Length: 307
Image (cartoon, rainbow, N blue to C red; front, top):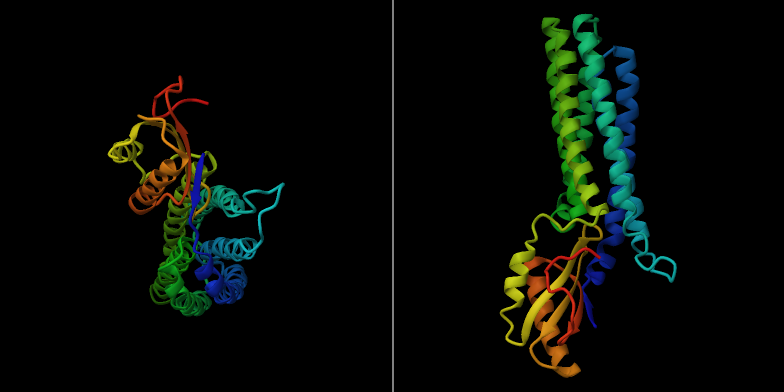
């Protein structure tokens, strides 16, 4: 049975400490923003400011998860944890997205009730806190921009912070409209818009994490195309019993049975295995491959079978 996997250990090791420090800094910065917005929202009576604080809090949780995951990835696998803690981040993302959706629905309920019973809001405090959030999130975005180009997890954090900044700009605009035009209903409208955005982001994250946890084939991988490509290798008669799943953001695994025309030697199999690995890694992004060679074995030759 042939097995192969490829990692970027050296790059991760070199950038790990710097990435961790940047994450820790953005966590502290966003905790300060969140606490300030919660206090300011309660004092000013602004529901949109509180909803933006919730958005920032969800991102604080995401950043903490990313930071902890970064620490845990440095731990080696063991006999009882052969995959280590690589799925901790996915499980946490599933839980966080679920709670985020529940809270977003609650915000919509509160905003609708406030819309029919508008309250005077201390818009000056809303404006200053929105400016603080814009500055802090903008700085965090710049801080994580370089890492976002190379790491999916960091890119997710980067996008969350970027949209935080956009939400804070919306709150600032609302604060100005309330201050100069006394349009206090704008607060409810902005709360609903932020809640809808949270629902969109939460559902997308829930769906993605659910698919990973259920071992679904990644959406960008076509099993039929893999089959057609592998069968172009002359020695291979059939490829079947294929399983493809995503372990975490960086690792995609595949196991399959490969039927050969001839009873080839182990050395010949190793050469063909290298060809298969290069095709799967370069063309499909599959970096963990486990191939079981077969010759005249009486089993199902379907590409996908139920174990």
